[in-house]
Length: 404
Image (tube, rainbow, N blue to C red; front, side, top):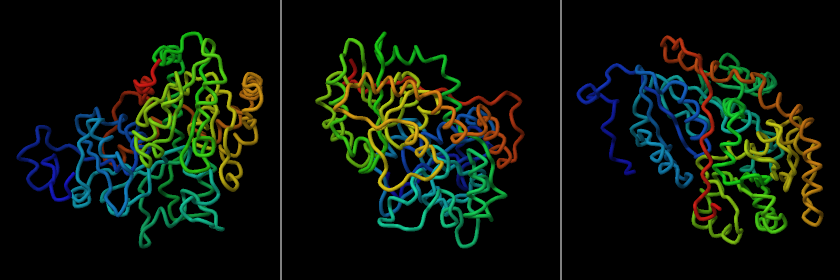
């Protein structure tokens, strides 16, 4: 999108001369990454049907950005404003699931996490090289700008995150709302759709093994790039089907064509696109082979058997979901029979789920109502008198090239 071309949309001094629905409250969703975007589309589903509300999107511009984000927003048919236009206007509500450039937008800001919780699974930031000071997603440098607390509402998943916030940025405590996890609640609400998801994946009566990888060099795909091929070749295809879920940043950094080429030799592998389908695929799974990423953590919270193909560089944060998954899951050994490792994961799954679930959320199945109430409070609108429900995961649609 050209930086100097503004959209003739529902904002601006002359907006009244072109809108069809006048007087709507304006909501801006700030989408720096596909990962943040998937969270924000879940969040806006709680209010976008309201005839009093107009939702818009923008992708921040900076010296660097992730590839494919604007294309992703357009594919969801969101009204996309150029960044320069977005920062020149004040909105009635700004929604973000990432800290990037939130100091530049104007309007009451709701900030939520884009993975499991607001406290990162790593003790140290990837970007800090040989850092020796631990970081979280709740540090003062992320939540304030020139002494001003940025979020008007800071969505947290658990009470333990309130404790972290009290230590790291106490001035942001008035903004904190323990809201649970909307993504988890949506997956839980869709548990009855498991067989429909399996049919969409073409699994039949076979057991579905899902390979889950976050991004970066210490991820499952980074450490064991031939894992998909090894698993597909080791398991009989009359009894097992295999799917792969890669973090959107893998696709953004390396490019869709390159990632597709790397996976081309894995006959029968169902590869999920980065923009949707991973939640449904986790619900359809019988066994997840993953790493320290959020996707594997959600699978564990849902009671799916988990085996670890990779651990993060350095130590996972004590008590984090990644730490619990590491402690309760066996490491993958490709030199040993996979069926035995699957059996071990199945045996460990109930205890793993019991320990992981309260670390993911302490407002189980309540997130939609809490978040919607907070948004309407910031919008200064009366809340609809209908119940708030989390959005259900979209049907999984593997990339056609690999769909069996």
